[in-house]
Image (cartoon, rainbow, N blue to C red; front, side, top):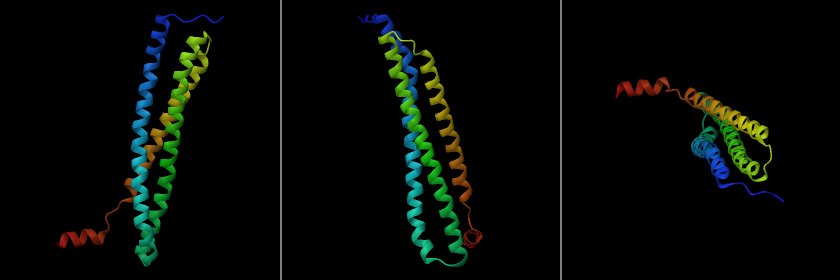
Length: 154
């Protein structure tokens, strides 16, 4: 028959689970930021697509180049979101396995450690890609010379 764990052991497991739960909250915040960036990129695409169809010459080329960058940014942000969701799922699994290990008196410590490493790698990769995406976003914004000249005249 399975022996029930003592209250002290359960309390200790809850203490161990607190750190991964904070990671889960951080993942949720990061997902919120990524979703907001994705929405802004999509809004910009919706503005540029009709302009591309009606423009000619240099203006058309600028719109097309910006749309290509926006398309890449969408892919990068989607990858950030996927990695963050993976991280959050692994975090939930770590917490569940902490309790399962305690309740079942099973040696799951190696599996828990490997999953924790995996969630940290996924989180780190998501953050690195987020940096790439923000750099892509700031590189595409260039104030055109004619705008600066017009502003200088006013």
